[in-house]
Image 1: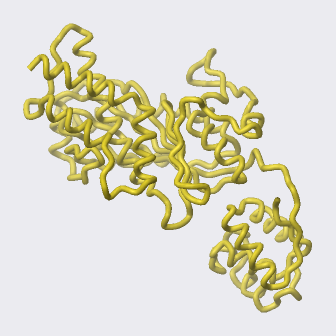
Image 2 (image 1 turned 180 degrees about the vertical axis):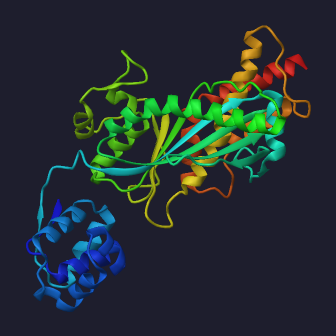
Image 3 (image 1 turned 135 degrees about the vertical axis):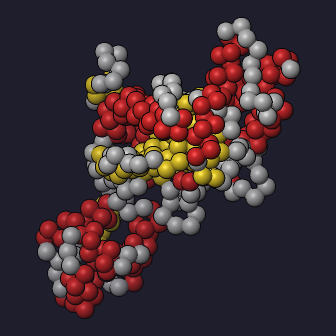
Length: 387
């Protein structure tokens, strides 16, 4: 059931402002009006009728209330004697939403990484307790990047890009061309850095893959649709056809059907903190996360830190297993050995006593869908045997 206001006046608008815990300025900016007009609503109360265009904007804000905000709004309306009705509306399936795209691009650089580490600044260790340093990269107007360089010759480029889209299908259509563009940019920017530090050109490999985290902000979906939307955000490839051209997929036109039927990926893992808290989904191809708007939210920085270490160790395991596949004994930089790699695996996968339940669920979901523990165990076992 959704709330419908029969006649918007200053009284109802102020109830909505309080339910959203907004200031006069914040509400004015959301509605595209002056803060003075919002102040006048409080003075005029039920005797000050809202314009039709403003009433439509307020209706739209009501449609996007969370369950907690909707309950607060209903209580305030009753408390102030406002007239409203509860109507049974179909859930919103399509509408504009905003998110931050986080892309993680790992590169195994070999000894070349030592030059980058020497020029980088210290960085706090992540959940695996790995020694890493960081370099802030100049932005090109469309993306913001930070390069994390680990002491086992792996670097992970973290790219942040804000997006505003009309559908999850639009995200999928953006995603795959962006992978090609950002992989090329990663190789270019690291090549320039290394060449500048060494004074000569150095070979930097083209990254093998990109892993995405989508941090969902404002969205149009009601609670019963949000779970399916997060599933699709974590696996947007199911909405497009890439068989003809990997870099330029075509839409399948199935988004509304999958949202309305509560679609789920059978291999995805959720890490929800409860229906009124932050919600996330991890899959093989990416992570989607919608934080709660208060202190109960799991910080997105915790997920970023988890993915940085996960992708760094994935790149290392790929390098070591590649050596084995080529018929060679796997090797690590001189100061590291198989015991170090086994310890890194344990620290990454084992929960800490001080972690929240949501932290533990997030860790289990990301590790469980990455296939990393088995790869690391194979790598450190081979290192142990060769030593």
